[in-house]
Picture 1 (cartoon, rainbow, N blue to C red):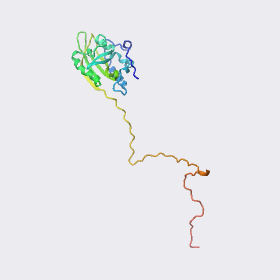
Picture 2 (cartoon, rainbow, N blue to C red):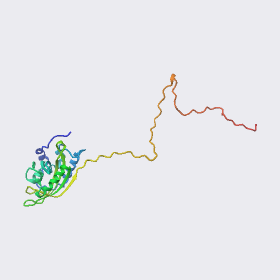
Picture 3 (tube, rainbow, N blue to C red):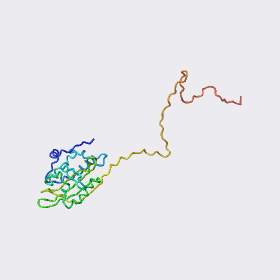
Amino acid sequence: MRRRAEWDWERVVPMLGKGGRTGKNPGYTVLHQVRAYWDGLRGADLVPHRTLIEPHGLRDALAHVFLIERIAPGLARFRLAGTHMTNLMGMEVRGMPLSALLAPASRDGARALVEAVFAGPSIVELALESDRGLARPAVQGRMLLLPVSGDDDVCDRALGCLVTEGDIGRGPRRFAIIRQRTETVLPRARAPVSEPAPRPAFAEDARAFSPPAPLAPAPGGAAPVTLGPPPRPPRGKPQLRIVRNDE
């Protein structure tokens, strides 16, 4: 049974998800961890339900993860966000559109990608590069968007992860999309049913041996007749004898 519970973000993030101001590259291993966690929640479903996502399952990546919901075709807003997004923007991003993290030139192209996440459903991975300026050094980033079903099992939410490399500097930092990859989510393949090995040509089915059932007693209390080997002929005078002509 699915548990209907939202994250207590104010309580969980200070304990588990504090991110530094430098935003140094965590090795992008958190992207793989989030993808593996999402894939493990799918089970037999096409995408996992939002109520299955729990903070302790994302313990090592919590500062970098977020949850968005679809509000219009190609548009989504933050429902929950880790502290790394707050550090990048210099403000709380919950309730803001996802496009707030993107440079204006990349927002139109991002609409189709965001819509693909929900309508596909699809997995979208983006390579990002920040703008530069005074007290704003170059920052590289990688974003992962994973579709999630919400109410009535409609795919209208997505679990996201954003990691960056480089000093954040003065916010807000916005990113241009420099590469993208879209992967359609497919149902899990069922395990093949093993068939018995074919018998050699002209082979017959082996029949199990079962001893004959004992016969019921004969009428009158006589001993039951049993099956056995044929009786040997009685020993005595031979029926044939040799006749000698010299007598």
